[in-house]
Length: 90
Image (cartoon, rainbow, N blue to C red; front, side, top):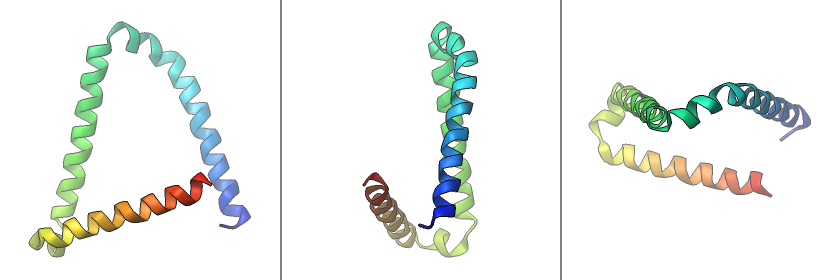
């Protein structure tokens, strides 16, 4: 990684941290007061995102016709991201 990419990554991390701080102050009382509703909202959001990704994958004919290829592609992605995580962790 060159210096520009690292600087961009640092800026994104700082922006995310500021966003979490500002939104956290507003949402924390809601989460404390209504934890079950918040959990349901999170579950619905994750489910919708998962189903959306699933729908997009089934639009690709090559993946839709071969579940084994989809499985192997998923394993490859997990291996690549695991390797990347180990490199970034150092």
